[in-house]
Image (cartoon, rainbow, N blue to C red; front, side):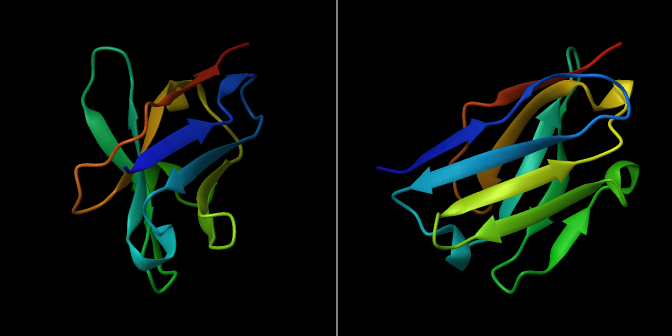
Length: 113
C-alpha cells in the first residue's frame, strides 16, 4: 500500500521560511518524478515544483528563486524548502508521485502577519 505523508506546514510571517516533507512508503521516490502542488481556498490545485529521477527540478515562475525541491533517497522523502514566503503562498500543499494516483493528505501553510 502506497502512502505519502506531508508534514512541516504551519503559520509563518511574510519573509519567513518553512520546510515541507513528503515521506513515502510502498513506493521508491528515487525512481519516480515527485511534485509538490498547492491549493488556496477557492482555487484550483496547481503544480509548484517537481523533481525527476535524475534530480532535475522545475518550478512555477512565482516560486523560482524562493523554493527548493530536494530528495533524500535514504529517507524516501521529498522536501520543499520555502524561503521569503509571501501572503500569496498561503495554501494547502500536497505531494504527488506523478503518473500515479498517489497523493498525500496535504499540509496547511499560512503566511500572515
